[in-house]
Length: 391
Image (tube, rainbow, N blue to C red; front, side, top):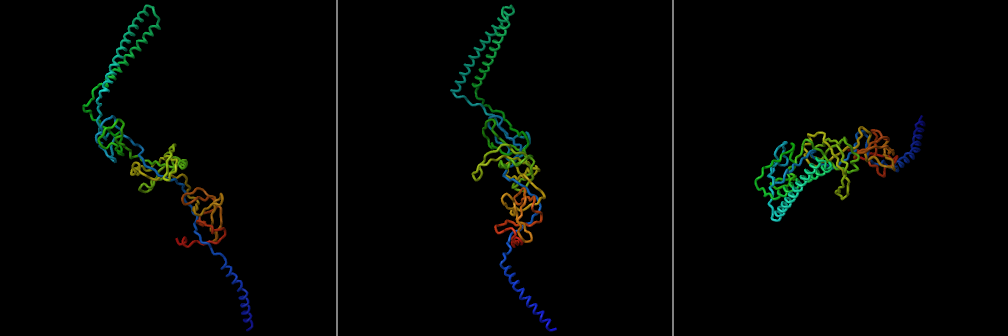
């Protein structure tokens, strides 16, 4: 019985000595085997992907009215200030009509000579008209006696009508020439009131102080605060991607983003020089606020940023942009499967600033490598970077 335990101990010793090289070899292979490569991981999820175009814009009141001087004269002090609200028909300014100036000697002599010439022409025209009238009377008398034809009567009538027209024109020319000789009217003129054509807010007052203006000179500029819109200058290659009705937001105006829609895209582009000195073709895109009451806070010519959504996909599988890379014409990712990197081709769609739509190749919940560098290869072992894992 004592020999049996001895045999068991001998067998265990032999097994230990036989397995020792295997253990040593495994330890050596484990020591020589490359370690797992650290990488940042990301999980594929579902959500919204929007393609936005952003550019600078300005607000403007849709209806702006420029009140101009109805006559040439002196504008008295304007009675309104920028920011005032006026009603239709309210007096915004008062002015007096300018009086005619005096004639100098040379101009006076020329005017008198024009009167003399016009008088002479009128006398000549009256003589021609008298002669034509007598000829017409004689022709009609001969026509009653059947001595002249009807054509002769018509010709004499035409000559008399032409002579009458010449006389009337000469009389009008004489009246015009005499008007230049009228003495200057220095008497006080009646005061003219300039009224607001519509109700609105005063935007600008070009003529703040009393001054002499010509007819048509702007005095006050009014705007309708009930309708404020945004005019944004987009690059022409961006504007062609827009169409009326697209959703937009107005940002960086001093408050929370405001909802808006694209109203129209102007068909004319203009060349502008960018801050870097590059020529750009830009066109105006008009946007309308959905809530016009909130838009009243912006006023006229305020700076804003306009963000227009040109494409959007909702509740779709999406991958971070940092996980995708190109291999020729194909988009690919490194998917993490059982702790190893698996190179996988994917079919993608639109992209925004953070994500791209994945049509095929990945599903929600899959784990991919973020920003794979040259050290990442198909099949290598991976472990999540500690800094990323701790966040």
